[in-house]
Length: 158
Image 1 (spheres, rainbow, N blue to C red):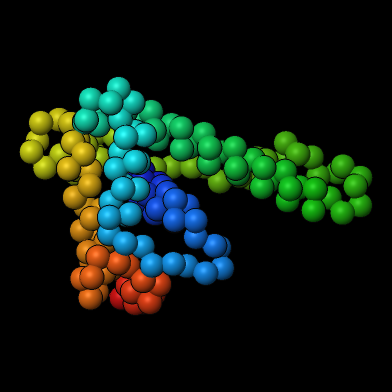
Image 2 (image 1 turned 30 degrees about the vertical axis):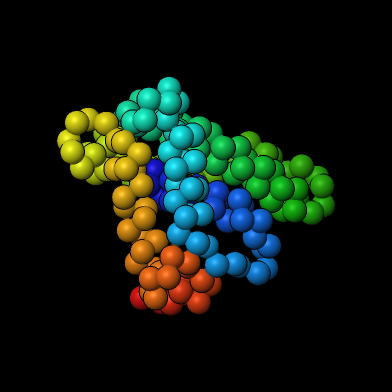
């Protein structure tokens, strides 16, 4: 789940920056924080400023459904490629049975426990933002508030 949230935040930041797929651009801290906040607001279904286990679980379900739909599309495309003689001997059902299962590493309750720094059973925007911004700060090696492609590459090498 955490991986999906991180990927979602980074993806949102990159998409909102209009980043070309072949040329990564620097990501300013404020823009990254804005993307993290937008992600929080997306998950906060009732817009009360905190994330509950139910909201986190609903987001996890949406992400798993989207992942499942994407995987099904990829498997269908692969089936078409594998059935080169188009005789239909490799059935779609047989091929789909080989799909890996999708699992999350944390339950919503574990995620709340990890993020809920004041232990009130809910995740506020500040609690949600904190770990993400710490990751940004760690990658922003020169602490100028902008993560450059070079800093991202350097962080990956660690």
